[in-house]
Image (tube, rainbow, N blue to C red; front, side, top):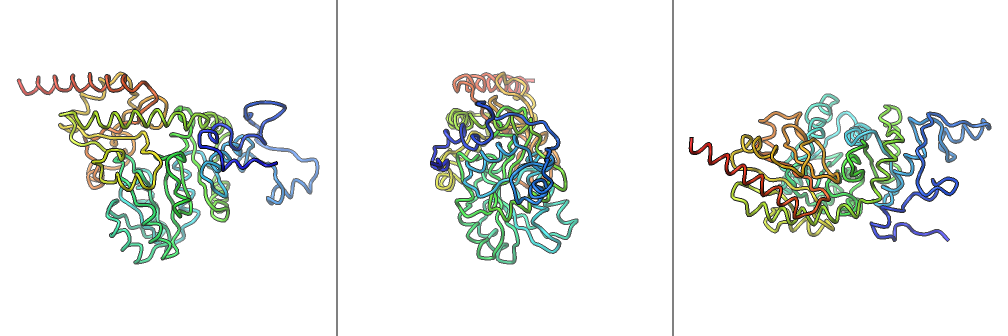
Length: 405
């Protein structure tokens, strides 16, 4: 009897889903298949595989057994009909947009997308005669008005990177469907554990698998899930343009996903406690975390998410100068351009998520120069708070020193 893996709890799916058909000779782990090509003694079988009439693999730029296993696990977690992967999160985003858009199309999106995504909208797509309208992220009425003017594709991200704004997915998906527009949602921050855009009516969901899915900061990857008709178009663009996920990265991402649910529970619990702690700090100007009742999007997040995630950000009084003093004093945080790993990671937009953007562009997006993006790891919560505490104490002493000069 076939077991319905969609009925499993997320934690169980993270460990077991999609692997059984790829286990070989009694192995309990999916193997890494490094072969570039796959041979056939029967020419007709070879031809049928090439035309996707028969299951199999021909060339690793197209498909690979290890990559298939990773894709299948994500597909099941997102409860999607089809899935395809690529070499990075940005390649997943760009493949999808260029596969589905044509000259003369109109895209409606938000100003608070990831910096690389924003550059596609502001620089690359206009070169191909694609009209892009970027709206204030939380002005849903304005977004609806732009959709009504004509929209072929609505692109959303929620929570946003790095200011954790929340987009009302149900409301905006409904508006887009009235115009027969495709809806794509970047679900990287939320993960398949905390949010399911496809269930809210989105057509495609995208992840930078490099982040929470892998969880160990040792493999790049991207993935797209949705109906087969659309995913096949993205896959075809990807296979021809060659941004293939390599099998070793697929294995590392697959291995990392086994602890996704477990990691996120610890990270999320710490993030909420740290967010409350930061709200009490006199040197903090503002805290951005949807789990706080004070957050503008808290009520919407509570409705459309099953958890508030482990990403938060906060701005320091004193701006960039304060950040320069504060960050190097943290002991339990890598200062690096990544997120979603088991280790806590602290970064600033000007060197990570929006390094491609100018200070003026970041300001227009509502990103303060004194903003710190804090990706909460799986460390002991009390240790993380103690680390922040000593860093604030040093910053306070430094600022007092400057004042007394």
